[in-house]
Length: 207
Image (cartoon, rainbow, N blue to C red):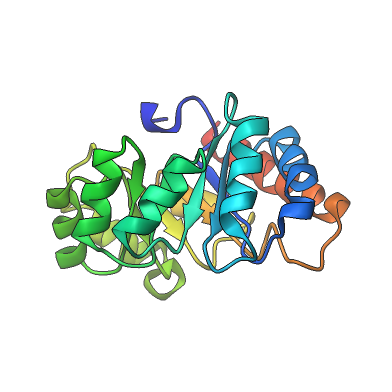
């Protein structure tokens, strides 16, 4: 496991649609289930408030941040709220540069080798292949073969607990898990159950 993940499983919980009133209970459930990386997409209700709550409550034992970050000024707001993880749906060199400037962790979204190499040149910490389901493990493996081996690749979109092993065998280092671990209408108990399933699947796959 790369040092980038700071000892956590390379599983990022994507909480699209989460509200500040529920974020602490959900964060507790995720961390207890084995997730140490939590992303609040910026198209969620009051995302910066949720990030601030997560950072204050769990910042010492989790990597907290935002998804759908598409502008440098949004990077600043995430960092000012206490977040560190900056995840984007696209490859924007200005967002990567600002993330680096603010000592955040840059995980831009890419789909092609051209985008991947541009993101690496811009200084990203890891690559988010999205939507990974369109490539499949075989497609990601083919692109990963030409990328610098020190740059971790995360698969986001369509990853299930049952397919984690296939993705790892293809060279994927980690995963962003969205609707398979969180939906706005799910109970905390259901979120916990699904998160534990992913953590157990990852552990079994890397043994």
